[in-house]
Each structure stands twice: as structure tokens, then as C-alpha cells.
Picture (cartoon, rainbow, N blue to C red):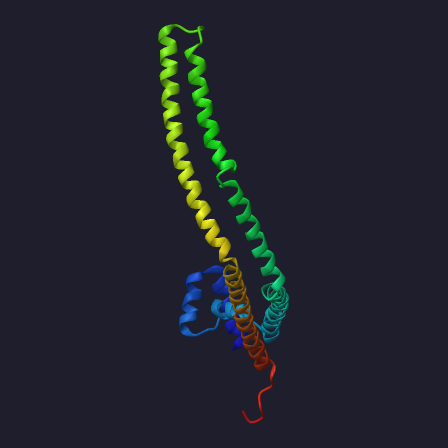
Amino acid sequence: MSKSRSIVRAWATWYCPAALALLLVIGIPSGPSLAQTAQKSDAITPVEEFSRQLDELKKSFVDLNKRIEQSAKAIDHATDPQASRQEIAELRDLVGSLLGAVADNGDVAQLGARALEHARAKQKSLAADTRFSAEQRAYLLKQWDRIARETEAATSELDNARGRFAKVLRTLQTNDDYVAELMEIRQGEEALKVVRDLAKQIHEASDMLNNFINTITPPQSGT
């Protein structure tokens, strides 16, 4: 009977697809279904699943080792008193340099004076210059007169800005010890963040390792 069914099924498949459909309806099997074949090919074997979890576990260990090394370096820097002393020393040097620049006889004060002196010298030289016509000389003198007035006003504003900046710089200079302590607080906050982040990553690695151990633990007898 089985042989007869095979012959009928082969005939139906080759000569008449409609007959094959009829055979399927009346119950003559035509071999494994496509769905069953796909399920078998897509199924992950226990060995494949073990390999996947093992690879993920090893990668997490490598990442954790790198994170531990980075955290150690970060903590070394954050807890190094020399680092904060060097930073405040650099700040003091910058403040001192700027104070020298904005002093009454410093570079900034001389910039405005030089610009104003140049404008007034041009006014004086043009007034006696005979190379130009009266109209040309009048126009040039008018422009330099405007530049001189505006330069004088700008120089006055520069002096006000220079004086204000010098005042706040001196305030910072008198509080540099307090600023140094604030810098150390900032370093302490950085160290705290490093510790918290490392603890979180180690917990995550522990969870992954625990899941891996559960998958490789044989079931208890009777379960």
C-alpha cells in the first residue's frame, strides 16, 4: 500500500500539480512541509547557543579589564595633589600675566595711546601737505578728524574695560587658595564618578557570568 501511494504521489507531482493538491486533501503525505524544514534549519543547537554566550562572556571580560585599567589611571590623576597644585600654579601665572598687560603702563594702555597719537599725527601732516587740492585735503582732514575723535572715545572705553578687568583679576588673585580647594573638590567628584561607573560595570559582568553559569549547570536529578 505504501509503495502504491508513493507511485501515485510521484505521478501527481510530475504530471498534474492539481492532482497533488487533491492527494494532500485526502491525506496522502507528500513529504516534510516547508514550515517543518525551515524550523529545523533555523533552530539553534545547544552547542551554538553555548558558543554564543561564551563569546559574549569573553568580550565582557576584555571590556571590563580595559575599564579597570582606565579607572585606575583616572583615580591616580584625580587623587594626585601635584596635579591640582600644577593647575593652580598655571592659573596664577595667567592672572599675573594679564595683570601686567592691563596695568596703567601696560601693553593694553599703550595700544589706545598709540592709535590716537597716529590719528593726530596724520591730521597735522595733512594740514601742511601741498600734494592735494584744497577739496581733497579738506576731505582727508575731515576723515582723520573723525577717526581721531572716535579713537579717543574708544581709548577711553578701553581704559574703563582695562581697569574693570584688573580689579576682578586682583579679586581672583586674593582668593586663589580658595579656588585651589574648589579644584580639588572637582577632582574628588571625578573620582567619585569613576568609582560609581566601575561598580555598575562589574555588577553587569556579574549578572552575565551568573546567567552563563546557570546555562551550563546540569539539571538536578528528579527535576
